[in-house]
Image (cartoon, rainbow, N blue to C red; front, side, top):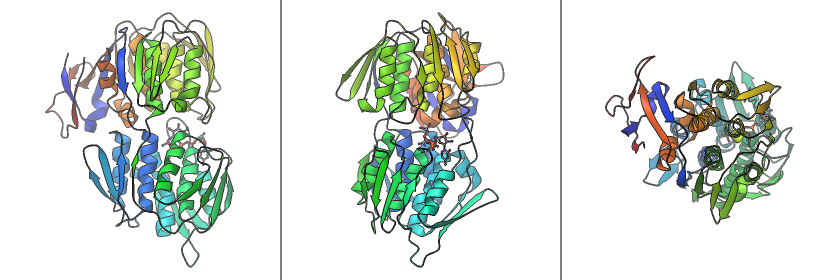
Length: 456
Ligand code: UD1
């Protein structure tokens, strides 16, 4: 088909054209984890020495985080397959609303800034399409560590009032196992005076990755991956070299795409136990799963309806709820999918119904009657994971679908359609000319082409 360029400056005007019902076959290389990379970038503020990160994915969310670090005085040196970061010239500055709100994870800089510089000023991140996403657990924990925090007119001002400008270790019990709050508090406590114990901590693999890297930098963190984390504060953290873990959500999305298209693919590298809950559900739904070292193969001949309830790790991840709902929409029988983490994460239901699915939503629970086949449609993706769900639905549908809203997709999936076309999907990225016509992307039409890629 076409040779094209993906240009991140005009994602709102790009569409994917997908001709469905092609079988997928082959291997997919899984990128580094977005959510790990974001917090590891924030953790780079904790040392004056060089930090080298391997396996950081090329995503718009990561670009935004790099921009925020640069605003704070951090030097970033991008090499072929690694990123060198130096925060020696880190300085205080107020992170404005556009930056913080464009990337919620940027708020997680508050912990490192406060513990390193004794002060942090950030705009308050707003809610987002999947829910209100409050930050009171971050704030309560930082206050327990001795910070004085004022929230005024949409801005958070955090300072340490004691003479030494040092946070003090404390016992903190989180009201909910928030991933972001656990990460904020681990980073803040790593340079605090004394011991901090976080109870009801989140246990996600990305938190384990953060603790692993911080310990390489000289931190003393015990219990990563458990709900009780102990942090003995140290005076200084050092540089290190670290490889980001593979993205379990990306891997899970491709496995679900393979199941939905009754295909047979392998994803690697992965850490298979990060995907246990997802693999169990795929097996229950009729897929054959084979794990060999750091790869997972899936072979699907039929799809049975199963029920899902999202939960904090090691439960079924909320980030794969939308893709799994797309799979269940064409399963044999009835399934019930309950979203328990975010209050507004059912954006994919209406478009799925437009494509011929039969789904009713009540109180964040989707009641699905599987249908034989979906039909192609023009669909707008409203958030990152619902866009992935729409693409999976389009891969199964008869005819040619158009998916808009690629600014969401490209936040969190590196070369999504390229990876799919390489294993047999028929997808092409086109530049939307006007309301009625699309044209394949023109290499010269926009300012900063970032890479070339081939569509099938
Ligand atoms: C992270 C992930 C996101 C994932 C989510 C849950 C990153 C960059 N993002 O988001 O992809 O979907 O974990 O696995 O790592 N909550 C409160 N008060 C707080 C903080 C959170 O009530 O102070 C609630 C939230 O509203 C939500 C739940 O806790 O209902 C989970 O949120 P949290 O774990 O904090 O998610 P994030 O860290 O924002």
